[in-house]
Length: 261
Image (cartoon, rainbow, N blue to C red; front, side, top):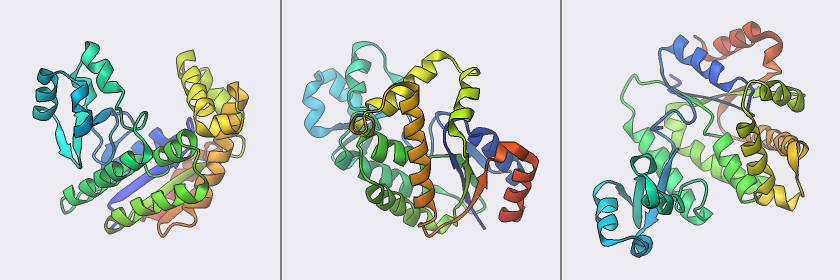
């Protein structure tokens, strides 16, 4: 039985709606991106190494040690618990944004292992992204690594989740610019500015001299190309839905057929 279904695709591709649909059909536990404490991801956490504790006061060090999860050579801190200057200084160690790759990678792989080991018999999960999107945003966009590095990391995750018989639903679009332009009217300007800044100012964006909305679209087009290349090289079951918005009913029927539900 497939215990983990992951819906992947670019922003505004319909991942959330599709994930919810599958979860309802399966009566499975559903986790959207940014929805809270994700069982396989660190959404808003920092990692403070023991060697970095000296950057905090004695009282703050005691709080970190008492109210965090000890991992490797440091502590996983849930950032939403804190405010003010203490929060600002913790934020400098946020996972996904500020940690070096050699520190972040084992932390994330450990989180996937922790998730797999926590599943009870009969549990089924549906995730919105995290297998391709999050690793690609890190390895490609933030660090500027090539496809081989991204594929190796994603392959390691797949090896960890293999006992769950994972299945990926990928929502592929031929005209990415058009879909993003449609979504811009539904989301505020802060969202657009944020994604443009992220995709153009990371290592990949700077190396390829990407700027503005056009640069953002160029980054997404390359990311989709790489994600599809990686997905088809993995030892994992998947279905790729081409331009699913043209007929969502047909797309959902294909998903149901592939999942045998």
